Length: 462
Image (tube, rainbow, N blue to C red):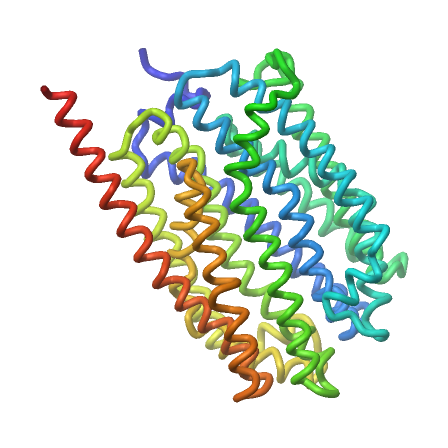
């Protein structure tokens, strides 16, 4: 019997190309809009508060990465586990996974938010805040941290919504969050003169609206998986699987936090009197490059339920087709990003600020950091492929090689030779070395998968 159009069973029957469009386009739109509102927030802050406020915002990136780490360990782990259960036709466990994800999101939110607020100034200084930039970073993060229960539940359940067959509704929730934020941000900053605090309040208001939308979806009995179908709100075995699979994005984001801390410290050290402006430039470069990376992440989010379902159903041919298509799309996206930032770096930077020093550092950063940007898209797709098929150890390994094995040593070596340019070059060098390692790892894994596929086919025919 054919799967219903709104059932996740179509993941095992419909063509991979159509599925990737159906699942990735909403995720890409949501990711792009999310990234755009981060850029717009930075533009409003830069134009309405000042260049030091941009640096203050940049100093919150590591802490925001930590926030994302603590929620994505649940969100991605839970979505992957649910997709695999649905592929195995185990709808009861898939429903129980929803309850487990909700409980874990709430626990993580209170633990992370409480501890971070208690040690906020110490954490921000560890990330490179100075007496000039600390007030901006503190004011922004206080508001964000007080709202962690809202943001954690929204992000966690939104990933579950996509994994259970509702990519368009997941897109709408992201668009709702962004729309409210973009409308309120200029009002809070310019009209109400709330400064950088206004940008944080606008973010929280947007996430609150989206959280209500997502929770209402899972209370609806029309949803394939909903709160009414949960027989156990917390299942220890499911929680262990969630943590096992979600460990990869958790470590990736924690490492990103540590790495950004070292980058900020290096920029301040080698930038001398212009160190704060160099950190602000890194924030601008990071915001812009993340726009294209978020598009790639949208593609991988669309791939996740397709890969997880077909891997759980033993459909190796469909898994490989999805991976190949994802690598192609991811590469095209980052090549486009490279061309835009290589040709128009000054025009892009002037959207954020008119400060000459900040513009100069940003242009240099764009030119050096993005030398290897075209290959990043393929690397991200491959790393998320391993995560989506329940092999988080490989995704963890590949992330660790980039951020610990390659980037940190390069941050220690290159700036000693080239000063602040060496800080930028260390990021480009680690991207290239990580890409090579990722390709070699994929080749080894695919050889094993092909061998297993041939063996299974032989046993079936005998």
